[in-house]
Length: 98
Image 1 (spheres, rainbow, N blue to C red):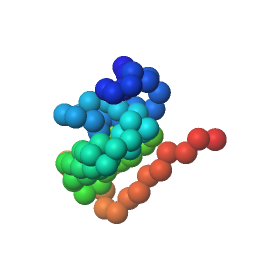
Image 2: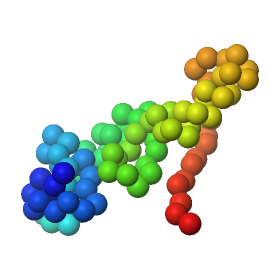
Image 3: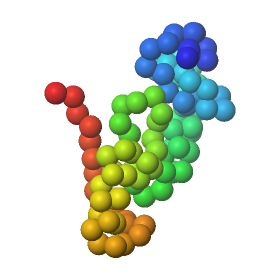
C-alpha cells in the first residue's frame, strides 16, 4: 500500500481523499490537504462513538469494542455476569512499546 500522493509506503493513515491512505508529510503539505486530513480524522473519530481507540496502527480511530483485547475482556465479563452488550464506562487504554 502506498501514499495516494507520493507513493511512500511508510506510516500511512486513511485520511486522504475518500479515505485514501496518505503519509503525514503529504497530508500536511498544503492547507487544503491539512484541512481534508483533519476533517477525515474527525469523521472517523466521531463514527467510533463514545470510546475510540487510536493504537498506532494504520487503521485510524475505531470503536474500542473492536480491539482484540477489549473484545476479549468484554466477552469474559459477559460470560462471568451473564450480561450481554456490556458497556465499558470511561476506560482509557494505551498501547505502549517496551
